Length: 312
Ligand code: UDP
Image: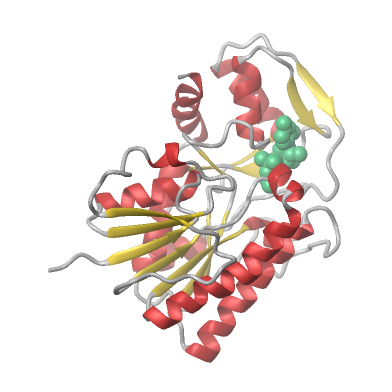
């Protein structure tokens, strides 16, 4: 039987490159589209020469043409870390609007199954805790995070209209803070910052009082969730959280990383950025029941592997 083809938009990024690798390993042909805005060819070095893998430098804000049959389309194209999406704010808005339209069109024309990685940011600074998929969120539509939050909310709305108007076999996955090897070192996210700071013996920067929480999902769990979401029957039109519900304050995360790296770094406090969500934790009941998926990797175990990668 000939191999099925998957297109991964944003496939050279942190999550995208792990997904491309997993799909090639599972026996798919993979076409990776990436404009290398934050993605890196270095992330693909394990598969770039594989005959079942093809990299195309392409910005999804431009129409997409791919030859041959396509069975699956994964849309992971976007700036995703707060410092990056705020610097590239208009690009982020356009990638998630025009880019999403182009990727949906590709999926419609090819009659492919489509998955978009949306985000826990669609819940904004949530008033409901933990966050279920049915929660509509609490988002500042004009704040400094809105270029990402509202862009992703628009991308979700557009995706749902393709399900309703074009009967597209699409699903929306809201991913929660994900970490692991290939997390970009300078992306300004909390896990990469804390690990870098500890390894370089520079101060650990906690924004605000450090009592805000996040729930961190290890990359292998995230990839297993994304694959299950597109391969499981009965997920058309569904919105599903994929994340790890173990919740930590940023102070706890800082102390854990400091201890694990045997670092002498001191903790320093910096102003909390505007609209920084106070709490975040996924309710993953739906992923468990619909996909039979749940995360396996505890934070300490995932950090051990991530710290080893950052130490290379
Ligand atoms: N944060 C921090 N120190 C840092 C970087 C981030 O205390 O050096 C905080 C940030 O204010 C937020 C949390 O850690 O409350 C997670 O931030 P991140 O940028 O990783 O992603 P977010 O979940 O906010 O999108």
